[in-house]
Length: 310
Ligand SMILES: [Mn+2]
Image (cartoon, rainbow, N blue to C red; front, top):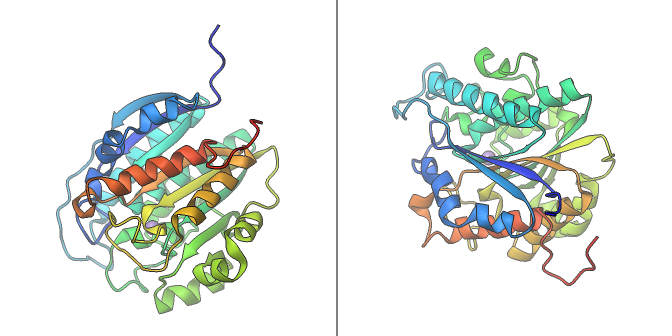
């Protein structure tokens, strides 16, 4: 008899860069497949269905209109992501969203939040990123919506995005922990403080170490908590992960990133995941995609060190 799989995962590709300031993240889902994500997860006893790619409007590459670039296209893609992610959760499966730029976290996390409301679960969101993604049209210089998803999810943004999922705001800022942050615009910084977002920035990680950071970020999870990880690949130091549109030096090293993922795996609470902003046009022989797959393996319990199986 086959053993029961530990996780039932569905891969959902969202090949678009409508929210970004650099083109190329639209090729992210295929690069993750080329880096063997499915077979790698299966080798750890995970059941994997690849649902293929969502479709949506192409990138019109226009300047901002009233503070937003490509708002209509961003709404269409996020609605598609929301529906797809929610459908997987409703079937008891674990969605892995393959981005695509980080604006798509609006669709993904609003679906997770809706599922948690329906299922009576507590929600904890870990936001692994170089950026706080807490801009608004008044604060952002660029109008690129991939800098705004956390603000939108917390109720600050255009109505069409804030209300995806039928409940505004989708998120209470208290449910979010941001890790690895090292690039925040001045106005955005004030707003992050005002909203009481819990941020473990690189200074905190430098001073306290990744282990203590993750102990705090993962504190107070219980058996009824749905843990969502939104992993922007630019979280990682660009020395090891050059294939992203907005590289910021001074990110977590390979070992720090592994420890971060391993400690998430140890909680046993991971229930949904976004892997965002991978940009194959800027990568070197797909090495950033291969690294992302390696880190996802650790999220699913591969331990670099010898540990007795639990
Ligand atoms: Mn981001």
